[in-house]
Length: 128
Image 1 (cartoon, rainbow, N blue to C red):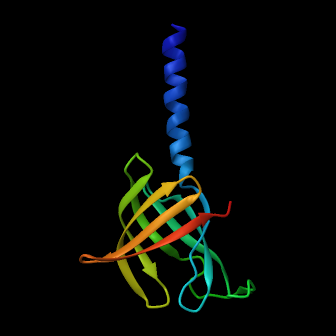
Image 2 (cartoon, rainbow, N blue to C red):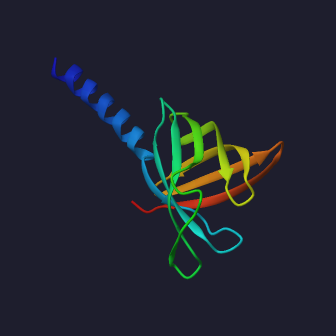
């Protein structure tokens, strides 16, 4: 009986750890102007979304952005192996939305935005 209870607790804990894996705030890679953003991931109806919560200039000073509070990443499916797909990523500077996929390795998130077969990948780092 203890073995079944242990297995059930471990399964629940593993599921919670995986759900928490993408949760939190990630710092984006600098854009062409040298600005970085802080993107907070959260559950959005069984999928994952990431909204811009803060922005900084290349000197590290916080700056205002019209994109603050808006989703940068939307409707990502958790594939169960630290990879996410099926969602989109929005580039507020160009006001364009791309198909996206992400892979989490430790505190590093590889984020790709694609149009047809052309993709651009950025490395985001966990801030919190």
